[in-house]
Image 1 (cartoon, rainbow, N blue to C red):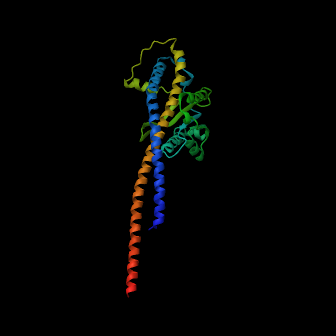
Image 2: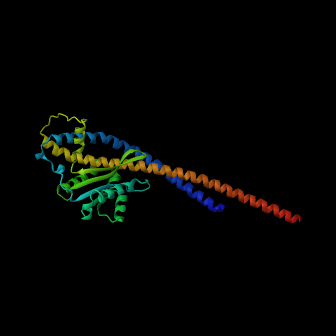
Image 3: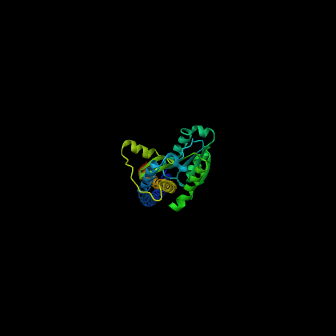
Length: 297
């Protein structure tokens, strides 16, 4: 059994750690409320915008195909990995990295073998992990989450769109955590470019999707050419909002569990300390009693 001084030192250390984790939990909870409001407000707008775009795309003839809807053979692939800049959020970051590696080594194994799979990392943690595993990280962006708004994210979406239009990449995929609640994050893999049409087709086959009858001015082609870039920017922004809210939820949950573990450990340490103290007192009493008996003899 450790001596009293060692146990007291450990109790002090655990108490200090518990204060830190408790404070981090409260900070994450405050940030989570703001991030949750932002993503829940954005979702209906993004969903409706995508629905209109898919209805409009379905009504166009094949000859009017937009450059962003052109489905080419995926010779060159870019995986956009959205993680966080900071840790202490459980398995939040490693789950995204594992999924990105799974996509690269599974779905795009042939392209990876040829060296045609690149990673664009939003967040420091994902970039560090992928580099340590020997993957090609073409670019890392760590400042987006410092001031997350549509104006700051739109240029990055435009850059991805330009790379696809120029033929630098034939397929661009987003990998991120979608926010569900503070304790649950849903791992998402979404095709960013080319614009997928499977959602609208699936609804039509199920009979749950009724194509709206819109009156277009000036015309369908002009509107779709304007609508697709805006929809892609909103999709990218929504993915970042989801990841940002999910990060704070994961951190709040992780710090809550850490605080609970520290509380349980502190309880055990105090019990051990009291037992050791009682044993020390008992030994001292026995020594005094033994000395007294020796003096009598």
